[in-house]
Image 1 (cartoon, rainbow, N blue to C red):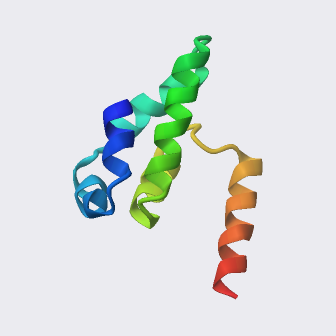
Image 2 (image 1 turned 90 degrees about the horizontal axis):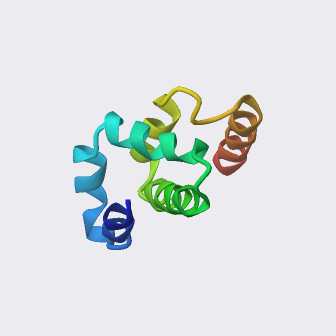
Amino acid sequence: MEILANLCKAEDNGVLICEYVDLESYKEIICHLTLPDVLLVISALEVLYMLTEMGEVSCSKIAKVEKSIGKGEMKSVTLAYVGKMS
């Protein structure tokens, strides 16, 4: 996860990450959010944050993972996105 987070820091990697990081990788990262190990949770949150910085493709892949976004979070994201469009 740390390697992927570091790759996300370079803007030039955005297209490659969006193209080659598959849904299974996103599932694996999100799986770590439920573990009792705080360091793994922090690491998973950091890489998810970095992936969301890559843009719409990465955000869509995260949203496709079952239980990655709760109903409340989805409403907030939708409202924020609609606000940006206005």
